[in-house]
Amino acid sequence: RRALFWFRRDLRLEDNCALYHCLKENDQVIPIFIFDQEILSGLPKQDKRVEFIWYCVQNIKKQLNEQGSDLVVNYGTALDVVELAKRFNVNAVYCNEDYEPSSINRDDNIKSALGQLKIAFYSYKDTVIFAKKEILTQQDEPYHVYTHYKNAWRKRLESADYLSYPSLKLLGNFERLDPAPMRALDHFGFVEAGIADAKISKATRHAEFLFEQFKAHKILLYKNDREFPSLNGTSFLSVHLRFGTISIRKIVRDVVRLSQALTGDQKESCEVWLNELIWRDFYFQILFNYPHVVTLPFKKQYIDFPWGDNPAGFEAWCNGQTGYPLVDAAMMQLNTLGFMHNRLRMVTASFLIKLMLIDYRLGERYFALKLLDFDLSANNGGWQWSASTGCDAQPFFRIFNPMTQSQKFDPMGIFIKKYLPVFADVPAKFLHAPWQYQAELLHYGIELGRDYPLPIVDYVHARKHALAVFEHFMMVK
Ligand code: FAD
Image (cartoon, rainbow, N blue to C red; front, side, top):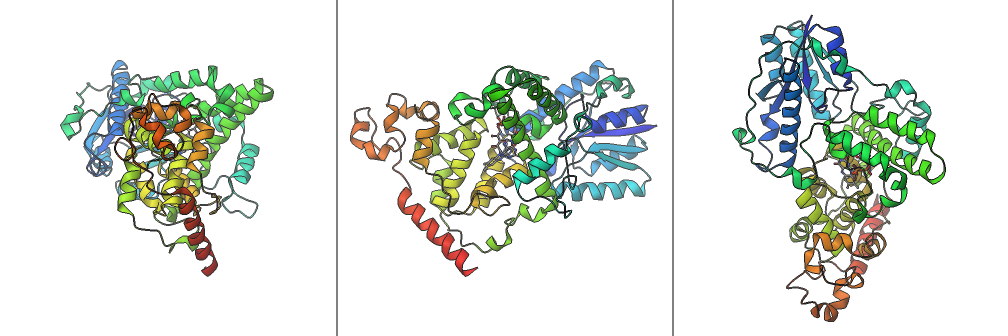
């Protein structure tokens, strides 16, 4: 039996569910990857994600070449998989499931096109621990409240849910293929964007390395350290989870085992991290069960919320020019690294939505463009949480105070100084609300309005205004 294996958001050979089934059930497997020009044509020519994918694909190709096989790399559209299946005369196409509505639609079309050729299409769960409708309420409804979902997720979890699929043991079933050269990035119009600057290595096992380091040191302190952007206390695994360069089952397996061996604060810390992974599954099932969230608020009563129109404010926010150092430093982190710390994602989102009343979808789109770990489910979930339009969202009256957040989570201004070097020599106490210390800042050669922006909104006024707009909206609804 002969089959195609189609790599998508699962760019690894080890512990890959669909790959395991494909190799086990077929004696000749042709692995393929498609650089989808329809997606690529909409991206900026310097895109860290494209570069990252390119390196991952190259790494898989090298590993397969060592096995006497090759990764067939196609440059076209997803539908080319049908042509490839015909060309290689296979019985079946295998891949892992993708839960974005447009991907589900694409896969349905491909499945039916293959079906007409009598070629089977098999897809497997690999991206998450529990998918689709696996975790439901007693009324057979998807959960809307994270805590209830988490409790049900944990209750349901058994070791079978995080078993490893030993795909590496079956590599001999890849068809022998002569290695074909892979096109350079610039061949399809992209230039290097510098993923090394984004702290993402080109090494094949970088994700495992990060995870080992995280388990050895950071996870035990995660409960506390995760809140402080300057401590780098989180795992930085999101990009790897996004592109499947590490298996979620391996992560959960190791963390569950580690947690079982720990007690007290260390155990709690481990559990807090596991809970973050459950948020990931939670938003995947929300996207799957409520696909309207892609374009509309989860809570439909917000459909006609009167978002303001503030192009200048939006531009200042994007460029880290709001005059609030923590917000600006966070946006600089996003713009330079393609990453932003979780707390700062919440702070910057709240600033845009609540203090400027700008439509959360604009911020969501900007993050989608910039984040290396951009995942529609988590990004949409995070933005709708911040906008109070999402399921289990922040109540509308909760508005992050950027000064208090700054004092609490970057008290020494270490993070701010890293991304806003203009403040390098300024004592931290002037950094949380610099407009209150204009005379003091002059001693450091900083004139607000010239060297660093004056605040684009007045927090107290903006907060009051936002509350009035939300309250009025809720009243007339
Ligand atoms: P860790 O703290 O080490 O967490 C471990 C893993 O758990 C993460 O890698 C991630 O896969 C998952 N996770 C953690 N928090 C969340 C969460 N709130 N929701 C879903 N999964 C979570 N995460 C993305 O992966 N992609 C996005 O596009 C994305 N956009 C976001 C937008 C907003 C407005 C907000 C508030 C959050 C967003 N998040 C997103 C969630 C979170 O900020 C990132 O997952 C996290 O900062 C990644 O860093 P880490 O890998 O070091 O996380």
